[in-house]
Length: 203
Image (cartoon, rainbow, N blue to C red; front, side, top):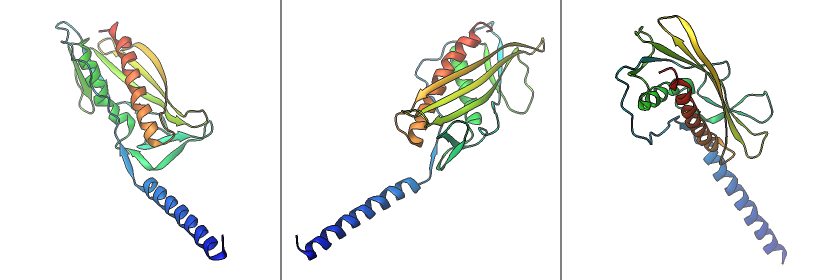
């Protein structure tokens, strides 16, 4: 290969390399907003005629997780956030209508109502708190770790009826924000099934 062709060849390689990097950077620089949403696959059950009224309060989250930023860890205990990928709202706020819909569809209660500001009369109240919701990259493949504390209160008796901590781990299908989003939705879906079993004995 003569000097002219050699320079031309390496110039072409450099151009292809720079082009690939610029395309990748452009793709990564596009802001993306994700939704926490669990599709309803089962038919709603008829509510109990003589069942109780369940109030679902706005879920809370501990410090570090009460944010619309998507949390990930490359090493234990060090929280980081995706710069271009976010939830459309905080996971805690997005969880409220999902909880109400799932519990309502279960048919375990006469009615299921969300409580935001105005007081509502009911028999039981479900309080929830997100303790952990993070994508972990110090394992392969990466995974989402979701921990939530649920508490049922007997409103007339003014006492706690039951408390349970749910711990769900779900592997990501890809090591990026898209994989974390998908794994989070699957983890929440598993949590909802466990929550139905938790509330069943008190309905």
